[in-house]
Image (tube, rainbow, N blue to C red; front, side, top):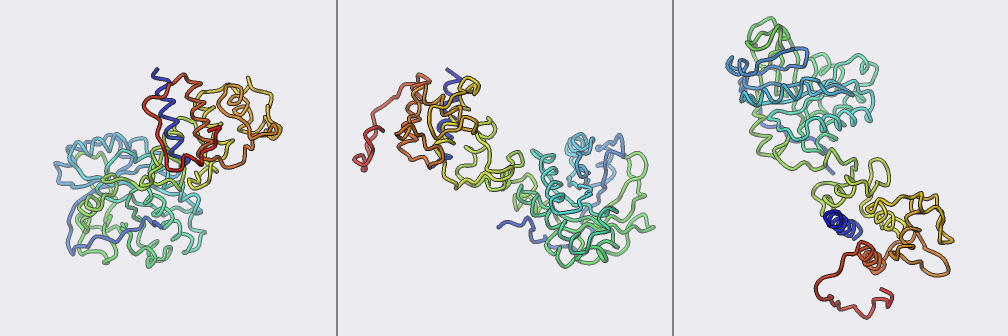
Length: 384
């Protein structure tokens, strides 16, 4: 009975299915004084005691979420420890991206690794590797903007981390307006004197700092922008509903659409595929072949048991071939006449209802309640 209920729910989802965002936000206002003291760490810091770090007067930590292709092995542990100690948290990804496809992959991976977490500081794109030196200024800047747009689709505020030389000579800083910029410019002072130029919201002023709770050297940072208040107020970085689900590969199925939950359910249960690896094409009409395939997948039909086509226009080797034979032999779907099924024709609402009725009968699920009448009852075909 539970199995039938699940399959019936899937039928309802399928019925629902058949029936310019950039990721760059306006910057919060920057203060002319230090608002928060921080550090940034990765797994190379080893056994970190975040309670001691908080007690030492540190307000925030920027954690390496990973680098191109791999999550930082300490990220989850560090995140839990920092949160438990009451520290505010941000993240950075060290990138080896050389083209926009690489930058999109970086953003998607970061969104996956951050899923379910809340950050009070941005997710920074760390661009400084030698593999990017051969690119043009425009290309390197495009990487930053591509990362920001892609991870912004999932609700994360993106920033850029680089040293002063890179910001001045390797990137077009004018195109990064509206993004949080994190400047690395080291000094010999134990505490920074002065403030960086107005476009930078955060400053990493030394790589040779020390803080109780961190063994060895640690990067020290100061922040001049109230990112936590800005992020929470705008529902970013886990504090609101992300536009897109990083666990769903389709770039055309935002959470705000009425069909999102149905697409996710049917995809998670391996009932539907996209029109490509990244596109679902939600406005594309459903064909008769698509629909019997959905029903067949719900029933986990063994396609090898239906190796012979029963219709002249159905190639048994097509994705819908065996499912069409299964649906016909079990009284779920009929042809359109003359031994034809018309698998590539758009399915009509009455054809869909006829197949659903046959499918529920196949499941031995009876109808309940009184039949509903419609103003256009006279237009419904007799066979439906």
